[in-house]
Length: 149
Image (cartoon, rainbow, N blue to C red; front, side, top):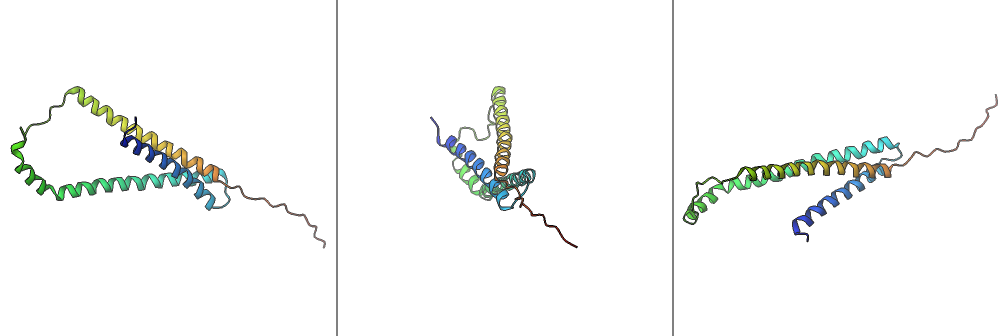
């Protein structure tokens, strides 16, 4: 059974691939007639721009969340001091075993590989969309006329 987090993550990936595909198709259609390699270049530029803007938005969101947390740190500390009686040992360092550390590192590696693979799949979706959207230049039949001198 899927939980909400898995469903949201899956929909985010599917919608990203769909939007990159349609974006690649749209950019090559809007540019007019071109050869396939130029269309693929348009798709790659679209993907790279999307990747850069997404990274900036994610980092801005994280820094914004950290900024809000830092601005409220004084209030959080006051609340923690008031509730210190309910905490068994507030200065205790969490005890993490070697196996738990390996599990955390393994999960971080899985996330890294997942991001890399998803990024490359996004590039493929963008390139496929731009390849399909490429229009060939029309070649008009010219009539030959003889010029008399």
